[in-house]
Image 1: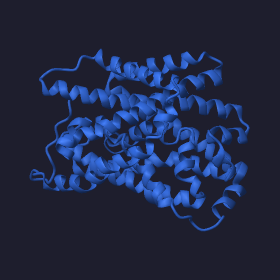
Image 2: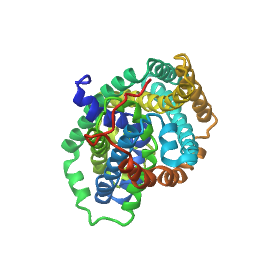
Image 3: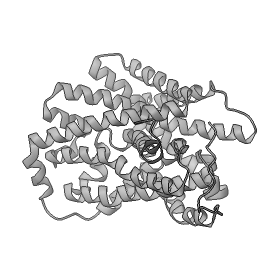
Length: 376
């Protein structure tokens, strides 16, 4: 299936997006509480499906087509076409977000192996560095295959978690959703959640190499929203069984797993979560490598393969340093500002000026731009 042309054109970008977004989007469940469940189960559901998913689909559809039309498969080239001289504003925000997420990834990787398998904290940190370094060295094709495969594994665990929760706590879930009308504020919560997660869309561009037509690009973008949000939806419904107590829990996923009382499911979830940390770290760092590779291409040169893992390990070392110095919480306070920054420099421009540029770009007789696969 992973080698199917239809899968690569229409579904692979969505699965890569889901793989990169999960660690910062809903891996621990805390993000779902902050942006959705804090408004109540019904309001959170509306924010998730009517706001975040719709915005994800719209922005991804426009972004994929923009990348295809302008042959911009790295974020520097993409934002140079979209923002002109202001392209660096996205890069500034991206590196701040990258620092936050890599710090969280490094800390979480060490803690997961320490708490689950009683291994030294450093083993988890070094392990994720080795895994990410290997994947970014192998390049786009291997990364796309691994991220897509692990997405299927993740879907299986989240589906099991949701079904099991409904079987154990079905009445509580139904009661939570029948608890009253939607509360005010859910619209803003959905917009904020969608915006800060959309910052990682350029990390998906490398998976668009098989997309050849406008129909394929737009369809892949529209499918990205549902593909990315379904695991979060399954997780959210399961958490609603324990509303409102779960809202106060620092790691809602642990609370939910403890309530189900299955050591096997807890172990499986921790393993999958560790894998998602590798996915997210790889996707975000690969976007930086593709940006560097783009500069090499402009100069008529090829980026040395050895530079790819060195970049990855170097960025993870920085993230580990931030985690060890306890700066995660301090830096994470910038999430609110980053949300509005990405709205201003990416979401709004791509849905307005970006769509205008797409429509004004000359096309061939078939109405589609001639396709030139991006070089690695």
